[in-house]
Image (cartoon, rainbow, N blue to C red; front, side, top):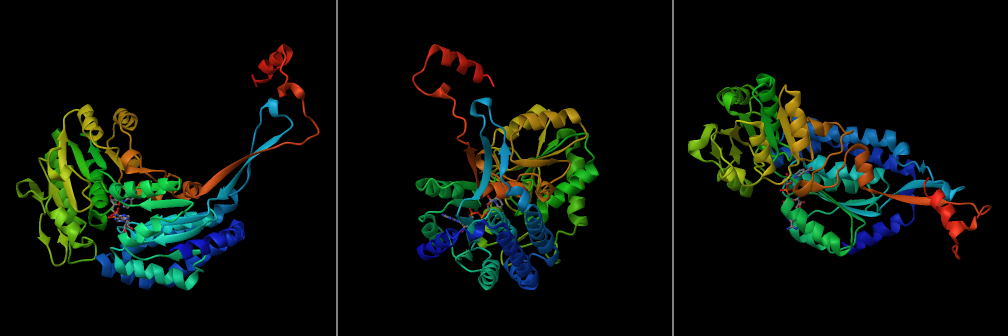
Length: 453
Ligand code: NAD
């Protein structure tokens, strides 16, 4: 580990990565490598948890291609030195901000969107001019191996490399000094990473999880709302950090909501026999999820199959905040439905839990929309939609409180891997003595006047 980091630090110190053409070229190399290896990437992810080519393209690779394209087109704008105004006190100086890369960065990925969550931060790090060590999640072992192979074939490890392995390897990595750590994963492991980073005062971005609510009011467009909600929930078999974790539906439409949700699951064909639906990533998660199922509360679904790690898309009704399914992030295909009678009650329920990564509201009421946006704190979210806010790279993506620190995507990603160096640049032809000692009442008077501007 030490050798890799030293090699990367030496390479960073050559200043080669500060050249914007160099960065654009590296992004192009990554794009071509991904394109060339699409079938390898598809096969690996299918073997890991039965993710289809359609889902792999739409929720992983296409987002990476878009990120690369956007970074390549905007890099000159994002990396530009930006002049800022000065006060009269500093006349005739100029002031400017120089975006500079941080140095050697560690990116730790989560397993649920293994390509996207590993390479998207890498793209941002490269665009910002850093060197990168990527540690993908070890759970989907085939995708981790595919990424390691592709990176090894296309990049000098002194610039960008993949370290495979599990907890032991990460712990070893975390003992080293980095200039930035970008972590995606659970809040529990986020705390471990944050503590390790504190030893070296390394800046971090922590992309964590949480229980993201969906609030459905009585005056929403129920058909479209449920369709979008069911899609966002059962996409990736519910193993999505921004999936609606639970639904708060107005009591008056509870039955209609449940019926429609069931119809939607059936009509969107979330079934194991086809490739619309995924496996649970491993046995531990399968066990964890099946423990949340309470037979008498299952409205629809509930079938499980241990050998194939299959959990049928499941709707639970009459759920309360005391049920096991409400005690932790679900991260699987179980949708608990809770009810509320006043919007204040719904808000209070959401606010009784840690600040979520996402929040979704389905309503036609602009006053409720305003109230929710004002009274619930969340990382990012959507009105009358789920998940899709992630696809707009103009929206910084990240959590708040327990759901994360910092954000990325688009220019926000560039900023996450950049230090903004502030400089005042002064000529010497004018040097008024007003600020120098000895001070006099007259100088103080002048100062009082100057400092107004
Ligand atoms: P995880 O925290 O178990 O693992 C994430 C990474 O941490 C992996 O690379 C893993 O190898 C490493 N790790 C695991 N245990 C560790 C330890 N003791 N010390 C150091 N490193 C360790 O998370 P996960 O299971 O991969 O992903 C699920 C979680 O991630 C969910 O909470 C989900 O909401 C969250 N998530 C967040 C985002 C986001 O963008 N905010 C995206 C995807 C997943």
